[in-house]
Image (cartoon, rainbow, N blue to C red; front, side):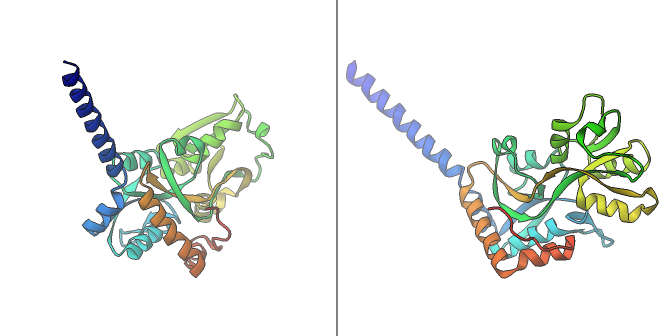
Length: 265
């Protein structure tokens, strides 16, 4: 009876070990699958110029799109571009609808709990913008003012940390809706990335919009599913080589009007 129990226990432990090993292997197979299938699925924005937007030829373009194609080319595989919004880009990575997310993704502790990040690949910062005749020099000046922001975007989180209770924060589902709300006068202020604000200001000079208040200086990182260290490290190699060769600076200069500069690893 005792021997039978011990054999059963040993068998159960063996199966558990195999399962654990299989799970560990499964968690590390993204790069192998990409190389075997000769294709990588990369989530990119299509509503966030100049990082990602649809051109006159109806094809995605922008810094993030170029970076996605760059990584695919360096891996020697086909790049499938997967359009995402701020709200669904991380779920797409978690449900394996994308192998990587290159979509102006900032790194913060909450996100690091659910996904991993590569080294930074481009500069970015978030701020509050508004008409020149609206006085905003500190967080306290936001009291009683309406502010448009994209739900789930990093500026949403940063704004929530400092906005006074009396401020009227209006959240929209994507950047186009957020900008449209501000331009149409639904809100007095706009919380967004500098690139989006710059594009909006260029198209609407009559609004006399200017930079008001910094929310966060936040370079962009590439999102990788938890545990996919082989893929993450391979992408880090590509980013490091692109820094050394000057390719990152060229991309940033082309799309942002400034070089990438000294980005964090």
